[in-house]
Length: 81
Image (cartoon, rainbow, N blue to C red; front, side, top):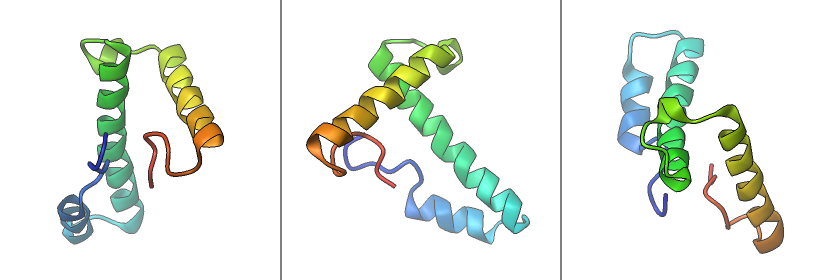
């Protein structure tokens, strides 16, 4: 995802100002971030639609990302929170 974030600052502000409870805001941020992450995984796995991803593909993607961090340091990999 390079320099892109899973949730932009503008989106975070928009969620924060929404008429939602704290818990609902948290779930909204996680949902937006998850959607972007699944799009990235689908692209890397060459799967046309995110709904066609399998749990196994998602798990393998996370394993590869974690291995990259272990071998190259915390700044490596896609998951940068």
